[in-house]
Length: 410
Image (cartoon, rainbow, N blue to C red):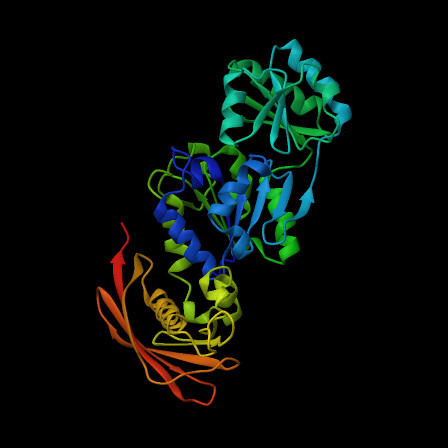
């Protein structure tokens, strides 16, 4: 199966217990995106709280998406465009607030970078603000203070039995208007009708013209079940609740054991032949770093030969108009680096170790040079590439030897 989209829950799935992405998982997800598979971060968190994680994974550079508020919004990171949104009708807030006060449940909602609540000292609300790096603002008259359409509202209590009672009552009372569910033992969420991760993932799939069979969804909680069941490959984390595991096609390792990375390596990276990835996709994934800044474009890719071009212009020339030797070496390392990345196994990573070059002639401003990288040694722990660089008239400019070290991922 060719998987085009990876849907990831965040807390308990992508993040470990320290609320971090491990270096191994991050490296695997970056490589996967470079090979053309996009990421959707699907979370109950507000969009503001997901953005730093999306930026860390470079979703903005690889065409990724945020699905926030358990499906209330879809945000396109590459265009900064809101693709979908559904909000709670503010006319329902007085009723929700009355019920909250009757049961002595604190209430809160999100607005931009702020949590609005009638109890800024509640430990769970403070934890939620800290988790999403949001400010807290106290609003004693909650319903009167909300002058916008909220994406969702949350009630809070340590009395789980009381929350369950109100949840069951509201499932009947609010049917056809709002949906309610407990995302944590202490949180009762109120969201627009028919908002959940699977329904909103379906909206995104329709916009992208992708079939559910071509996606992988990974999660650990009850809120993830519908998207796990929707996906062509539904995955439960090793730390997931048993009810979630029963709904999954596959159970991976826990979030403390790089469970997400294990799925990507097993079902995505092992199945992708990098030489089959379109060149425009490879070039697009490289445009935001040094490669893009120097104007380097890959023109041919195979397992033992890589070709690329680079303009001789203001970015790459010396003050007197000839190709800079440093830019030439950067081009050679870029070509050899991609070549080694392609032939590395999923459990291997490549580190550049040595580059040595002989510059035999010059290329002048206005020309475009062509690099031809050839694999001359493929060992267990190292790759050696020879990279010849030519002018547009096929005059040899430089011949460069690049040594890459191959390391096993821990």
